Image (cartoon, rainbow over all chains, first blue to last red; front, side):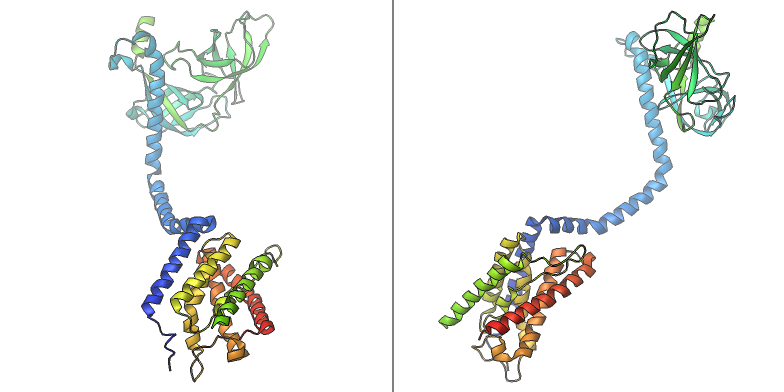
Amino acid sequence: MRNPLLANNKLYIFVLFIILEIISFVLIINYNNKQKDIFLYSSNLFTGYINSKYSNLLQYINLKKINEKLKKDNAFILQQSFNKNATKNYYKKLKDTLLEKEFNIIPATICNKSIDKRNNRMTLDKGSDAGIKKDMGVIDAHGLIGVVRKVNSDFASVVPLINTVSRVSVLVKNKGYFGILEWEPYDYRKIKLTSIPKHANIETGDTIITSGFSTIFPKGIFVGTIKEINLIRGSNYYDISVYLNNNLALAENVYVIENLKKDLKEEVEK
Amino acid sequence: MNSLWVNNIKRFLILILIQILILKRINIGWADFNYIHFFIYPLFILLLPLRIQRPFLLIVAFLTGLLIDMFYDSPGLHSSSLVFLAFMRRYILRFLEPRDGYKIETTPTIYNFGFNWFLIYSSILVFLNIFWYFSVEAFSFQYFPEIILKTIFSFIFSEILIVLYVIILNPK
């Protein structure tokens, strides 16, 4: 026996129930931050999980490609910055793209190196096929690495700064004195700066940049800072220690600098 | 008829005041054990007369819940669970229907149906109400163990309060 008062229109009641619940939920989601956060979080939880897994997978697959692309981009930016200095003065009015380009940058990776020997070596994973030639400069994002000495089709051997035969021409920034970087074993963070005359007014902390006198490195690459200055009795030159800005032990991604005007310069210097 | 209205409004005020002035401030729990919450206001919906129209019942439940929400600073939370309780009330009543049916003018109380009947009736509905409340509060079944623990502890204490209230005041 059913009470007629309890038996209303079922659907009508259910719709009313749903409407009231929806109002409640709208209130909850609009005014209660916790539920709002959870709602957004939950709705993103599943899709977000799948998306992140998928993109992780893609990233891993494309890792090499991405890395390669980044290095190329970096090389392009470096190239632009070097060439800007070179062209600023001479080719301002002359918008000749052929003349504008003085340096070409080739990205490469160090695939073998030593840092604890007297004559350290590094090997790059690219060779003449990638356009690397003998006597090209090698840098990384923080400073100098060395100079290419030997090349075959796939690899290049580099004499790094931390090799006793390495000689790099540098400037004391803003003071104009130029000297030569030589290495004395075995501290790979420290390098000697020679040929700075006694009368030069230098201080510890002065910045050392490349001079651009040779055809190997463009002018103005930050090399390091002066750490110690000693006077050797009877000598006309300071004995200066320079701390390298980059850590050669950690260097991995490097850029080989090709000087497109090398031949022209060497021709007149003969 | 008139006294029925007055009684219900009085009960409404008493229950709301107990809830927001006393029970809201009680915080039994320590460190990680924060599972006990008291709910006495569902009793108001439980004790509304059987003959009340269901749409009206749902709307009353919704408004009561909103009023509680205003004091709890949680718009929609209590109203949602109380509307759910009001919606379910009819099905539970039908489920617990005595063999000879309900009298039209009665109210579901101990006085009319006996202690056991009321205990079952209120237990089912209060449990559903509290479970809904904590589910909506957590808003995700990710926290299912916590929801269950909160529901069980809160249900036990709330049910004790409700039964005590009904025994002491014995509404007709």
